[in-house]
Structures are given as C-alpha cells and as structure tokens.
Length: 305
Image: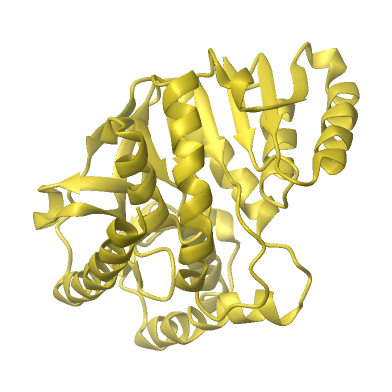
C-alpha cells in the first residue's frame, strides 16, 4: 500500500504521515511539499528513522513519484493570513487544486483521493471537475466536525466522549448540520436536551474564530490525522464502515452537481455506498441551507476553472 501526502510539510500533512506510519497502514509513504522543501525533507528524514523498525519506507518526493500510489491525501494549501470563514480560502487554493488534480490524473489515475484542503466541499468538487475523476474514488475530509460535535454533547452531559456517538453532515463550515437524531450514548438513542442543542449551535461559529485568534499559523492537524487514519483504515481493510465525508452527489438526497458531506460506506474500491438518512424536519431545512451555500460556491469553482 503506497500512500502519498501532498502538503506533507504542513500542519495537517506531517501529523497524518506520522500517524499512518505508526498504525502501519502503508508500506510506503510519499511526502510531497511546495516551497518548504527543507521542512519537508526534515520531516521525511526524521519519520524514516522513527518508523524504521516498522519496515515502512517514508520519503520526500515530487509529483512524478506519484506513480503506483493507492491513496492520495491532498492537504496542500496557499498561505492565507487570518480568515473569518473557510470560503475565503477558495480563490487562492483553487489554482493549486487544479494543478494538483492534473498531476494525480496523469501519474496515478486509479488512486483513491482525499481532499483535505479548505474549503473542502467546493475544492473536492473542483478536483472532480479538473481531474475528471470517478466520483466514488474521491472524497473531501470533514470528520473534524463530527469529533467536535461528540465532544460538545459529552460536555453537555458531563461524560466521557468515548460514550457518545453522532455525526455532522452538510458544509464543512458554519453551515454544517449536526444530526442530533444520530446521537447515541452507550449505543442507545438519546433525545438531546434543548439547552445542549442551543449550546452546540452557539459554539459552531466560534470554532474557526478561536483557532484563528491564536495567530499560530497552524490548523487542526492532530485532529485531522486521527480522522484521516480512520478513512485510510476503512479503505485499506475494506471495512465498509460508514463515515461522513464530502462526496459528489448525482441524485442522492435530491441533489446533484456539488460535493457535500453525507454518510458514506468506505472500502477498497472507495465509496461503496452513499447512505441516505431520513433527516428530521429541522435537519433537512439546515441541510438545504448548506447545499444552497455550496451551490453558490460551485458557480465560483466553475468560473475559476
């Protein structure tokens, strides 16, 4: 199993390379970077030594080295400065995404591709258009929303997060749709208290603001590494596990011509199934708001491409 991480020098790419290697999910990890070649090579050298006893090849390379890659994780992005919404990152990043999609299509057209660059949903759709990929071999990473959702629910009930289940769909941004109907505690259905729901909705818009307010120049790389490992494991082990991912829809949920986060079953062939949940009325309304926002983003993607 050969996995390539584009943006390997970054705050998402480097932790992901470490965690995938630590979990022995690849025989080879190729790290591709941009301007920070010294940082990329330093990470590759250090990781290669750290994981040497696991018999995993970890190396820095370039796009021509993508040949034979089974899974590509694209975490590359242009430096943005402080932002208030992930959509602000679209104009700069779409130019990069278009070029990367061409490299992937040329060097490893059958690879399973994971878009981890923000804004994830429109950039996953841009990758789909620019590379002409099979939509079921391409997803956008959005699991962090579900991790935070479970964390918020656990806090509301003063319990360990490990006891809580539940997912978020829709846009990977402020228009995300927390599915309270999917919340489980110790595997049992829970009618989430209204005050906890309000707290969740009040917290969602503050998440990006709090990260940006630190002016650290980094993003949620460790969280992404955990989530990306779950996705890669599902593909490598052909598990069929259902996880929320941004995927190009062609009629599912009554939508087509955009990428949006919904539950999907993942396996060795990529997206095995797009799972259509029966949403509650308020969830459906929020999902329609999210899809409307993303359709607007699709128009921008098409104009940029």
